[in-house]
Image (cartoon, rainbow, N blue to C red):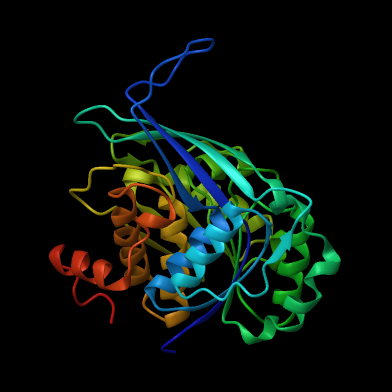
Length: 325
């Protein structure tokens, strides 16, 4: 399979980014250093990342009839994403986010994000008919939690019944309906989301995660009905549990985080692309980790998502030139 067909059902969000040397305390006002806007949203980020890597991506979601919506859709289209199914709603605004970045010399940047969903949370079941009718065309369906849970359940059920693999990135963290889980081929929480879903905290010792905790969290998710579990562990890399086997990959080395926004979305977009290409699991994880590494080394969500040539160059520099073709 040379050009995977991927459907992303998810959010479109305009990020309003403020950089500061220190996060303010409660009741405190401070002077920031930089303000910028950048298109984002978990759904749109993952769609753009998969498309920039070479997938044939279609996106369904909802945006307002405003300038933010125009910019988001234009950016997606410029990356090769088919956004023709996206609905424009003139009664509300496009989703937006306040992104606060703490930037200290010599340290990796930290972020705090507040999302105002706007049109994203106004998708209704009747608006799914067109995309549900096409769902068997796709090799993978990607979902997140910045749209109504009901919509995720309906799309996951439709895809599963059509034999199309479903990836759910359970972010932002939220309880998941029991009926959704058996429809998922993959679930991809980070360690904090895994703890929220399972009640099992994953301990860290420096850049190493406690693998017993990771395995216990993954087992609980599979016991709940999910077929395969992918847990991202920040500086400790990522671990995939699939088909009764465990695969792991460390994070890319020598990377300083400029802006961690969209790192998870970049990883998931790359993972789904490599999975649809049929690559070996270890290679998929290595590819996804290096894709995410490039994302954190640049500013903004969508603007930081790399093209495949840049990922290939980083893999070659790191000695992984033969891991994917």
